[in-house]
Image 1 (cartoon, one colour):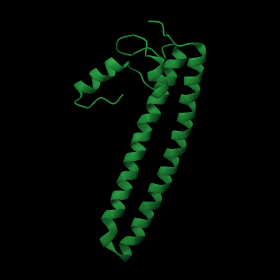
Image 2 (cartoon, helix red, strand yellow; image 1 turned 90 degrees about the horizontal axis):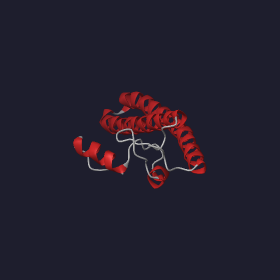
Image 3 (cartoon, rainbow, N blue to C red; image 1 turned 135 degrees about the vertical axis):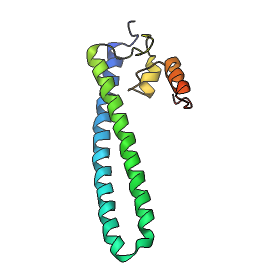
Image 4 (cartoon, helix red, strand yellow; image 1 turned 135 degrees about the horizontal axis):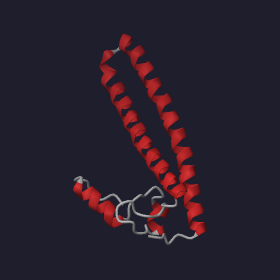
Length: 130
């Protein structure tokens, strides 16, 4: 069950997770401000021209979808950082095998090895997203 990560690799991945977490938090704040701005513009525009209302709603929906995606990424980062602090980072949550450094380097918040991730995505009817 021991990981094949060196201390240097673990530290680099932890720093990557932390930096990505900070970037996601700022992105979420920025998108929330933009979404609020579009909602305010929408209210003002309804007084002037209701024909563009659907465009504004679509833009807001897209922004909220982006926010939701970023929140899920942030949660994945936080789970990976908890695993790092618990000494389980780099170990698949399903099979207890080591997650290769290459996978973690490409996707530092990965909680599963590629084989288990493919199995989960196949069971959920999603195409593999490695």
